Image (cartoon, rainbow, N blue to C red; front, side):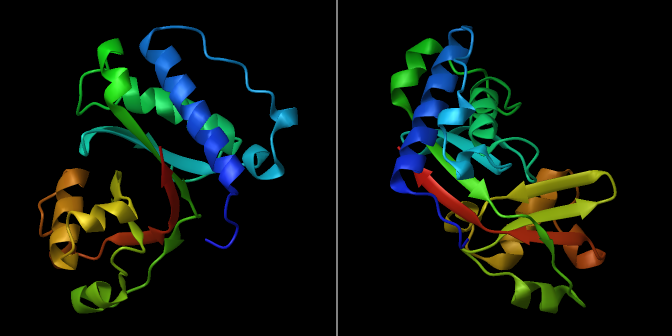
Length: 189
């Protein structure tokens, strides 16, 4: 990602995410964002994923794969959603807020990855660089590039991504899936 955020922009986004999460968990009205006071990069449409962890364990992760609103609003919206709407977890309780660590991933636009067969796909994916989206008809799933840290083997990564999509783990070996890749600028508290 060439157009990196400044340290001040990252700090502000983390503050927005923290405030949004705390207000959401307490069922309070979200603070109004004054976009006029924000940098151009934060006002531009941007896609983000918010990942919540407690002691390094996932506690929620929700985001957008493509931009549709100002980056700062996207972060605010997905911080609340990660805390309250991730179907894999119960909503974050107020007593958990002090233990939550917030990570923000700002995404590039996904690009289709052309490949000829499974070996070509394995060779084209870049571990620890590419986030991957798999699509099979109406089903889709993604792993952020950070998931490579937990699943460094490319074939196992794709197996798990197929499973997340609701398909058999070896689906990527048996049929040609639509594969898209993106990169992220990741920062955390």
